[in-house]
Image: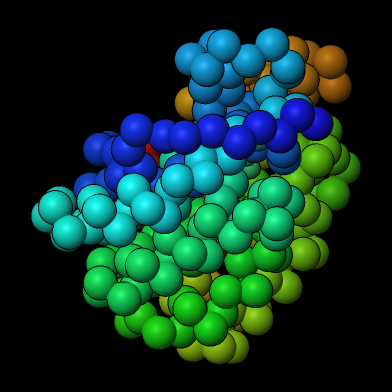
Length: 247
Ligand code: SF4
């Protein structure tokens, strides 16, 4: 794992998901096989495979302090192309310090992560009424998780994280994206842990080799995604959990 300190030119970037995206790191130690953010590897001239490098934007908080003064307030997505609570955050605490700045300035925030480390920052998260923590969780099947997300936190850790956050009064979302085989098992385990659920299909081809290697080609097809989305939507509706299908 190569960790490198770097200086960024800016920290709040335009986003198609929310007004802004904020990425304190380039690269992600979780290295999910399907991750679309791997384009950052070429972009930053890294030779290491995706999941084996992280650049730390050591000036992230200085930049943010300046940018919140100058830019129009809007929802900030932390993060778009890395996990903001990947292991390196334990040492550098950039996500935490950026969150503190945004909360102090009353900017709305959506945190997106797979990591239980987000619970370290409950004290900051609780200071704002306009923060949502969205935990990405793609399957309820541990074997499928191991195949597609071998280095990411376990399903159990993510579920427990949602429970802890919700019990502290923090708004929680589950992002079931990309839907993987075994996603149908998430309805029962997400009950009483989330305020909202988002569902999406696999939109990228990076993990095609993984499906093929494990004989899962049937789960790459449009028919699988349509059927699974309908099944999940109905089950969440029946469970009175607000749910949105994004495709
Ligand atoms: S946790 Fe998210 S950003 Fe990190 S590798 Fe997995 S999908 Fe990509």
